[in-house]
Image: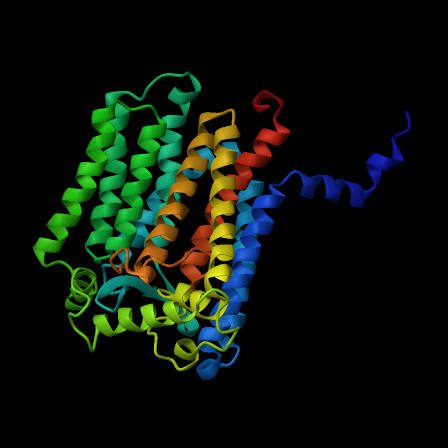
Length: 383
């Protein structure tokens, strides 16, 4: 019996393998990373040449490789690996509080590695929580049953433990993302409304408790208080926000041109390559350019949510909802703090801000979504 030569061609097989991925999501995410690389280069070239540009592109390449590796693992093995990924995230959050951790800007959130690189465990804890809650709720959703009280209590525990460890650093921004994840996933699971409202109450109560407890460093408190009183600390946190607003306001409709922004090129905006990278886009690309960037980020989020909605199994739906909520909250928070609409919490703009841990974790999230997409396209029982 002879085989079909068309099916034996290696190139055709590779093409089919590539076509099975969510190319729209992968291309759009890569496009955001490329825009981020250019913005990081503009914000740093005057002092570091192309060093940060090369690192950002390298982080992007490594992140994409991680996403492809996660996709190859497959949906079923990811479900099995979920508890181990969650446990590894907890181990990292504990390790950062030991002598292995390092304090930067009042937060003990990083573990120094070789060659000047650092690891931020709170970024990877987001991946662990998405996998853990997806694995917890998926079976009952597949059977169209609401989560049991036991499942909901366990979900609370799974979220509260890493949130507590993150707040010990302290890292208010990451804690907000983790609570937002819990809110969305518990709601998607079909929990009774008191449980959903309880997540919101927990988040609000936790934030208030943290602000009153003195856990935050003086630097972090100043960043939050300046949101309420822009004239506070004019030489510190107030100066940061004033320069950011000046940069954004000077961009106008079309911007001052790539590498032509006066605030950006003058080095007046602190932490512009990560926390305030959006101000570089606003100043040099203008309103039109930032709308384009936000449109691209919005497409990534909507595509992720669409993959979740179209998934025929509960695990895929929770992956899409969790990763989509994670990215949406960070985008809203980062852009909001640049515009003065939200307090400054230090959350990066996904795929745009410079930072290895945030880039790797975000691509891992894309890999989870892509794995759900591939599973649906290849498994006849899920189509």
